[in-house]
Image (tube, rainbow, N blue to C red; front, top):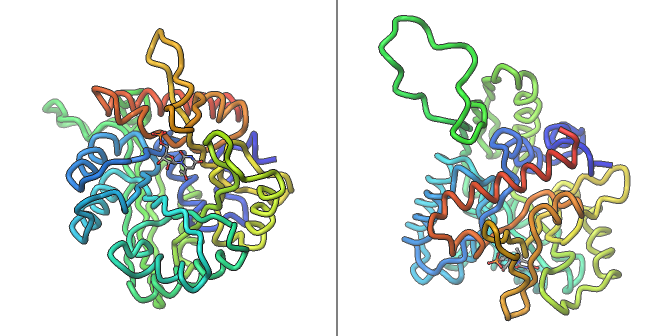
Length: 349
Ligand code: 6AU
């Protein structure tokens, strides 16, 4: 089972779709299985938050419809920060309508989600057709946008102002401020109907793997993915075990597009399953205090450790736990460390 497999090994499984591989690979390099839920209501707040916390996360989740002044400027600036800080963007749209309508909601209107968010999510209650509808909308939207993706992943301290010395830099990179090793990999591919040659620059120690990932990235016509909401974190939610199983069944039929679930536990039951579990309702007690159990509005919380080690969740989604901290960058690092430690313990690293 993938429960005890490293993210890196899961990225390299033959059937892992390109965007899932990319994310798993990114998580490995950044040592982060933390998704920030950026539930703020202005572009300025969103960009400030993304800048402050970007180094600690693999994914930034938005609710574009709560941003008062959401527009092209929001998208352009957010994409630029995502490029610099190396995280993917997840619009938490929770689609739930007939196929024809969700296609338009996904690609048109003031949000035009498919244009700027690699990942989005949907409910299955309208029936399974919602998945191929979103999948084909993603494919044609991407072909139309002719998106170019160029990502350079660089983790760890920036090249430190080196002391004046004629000797070449040491071959072993310095440890980062949080003990992470510096590693860099360049990923460059054009996603369009034309395919361009890809020139990977493997990092020592990660040799071979970037090329594998890139080969698969280059072979795909689009880099968009969907998560199905198989469970919710809120008290009394109505997603029954049967409903959850229906989500898993539909996901298996669209493994190239559905890369995982929003759920409170891992749902990988068959040998071929390698779905990524994204888990909200996560918070950490302030050091030395009791944990927060809820928000009085139905939200229920657990710790990153419960989610990742206890129930096999892969990515923890944290909103107010980080947003309300005085020092959000520092708090995000605390969550990143906790969630990553739980993951390492799970896979026996
Ligand atoms: O950490 P919080 O409680 O401040 O924020 C949790 C975030 C919110 C919710 O809209 C979202 O996670 N969420 C979801 C998602 C991600 O789809 C599902 C769910 O069951 N519970 C939940 O809180 O932005």
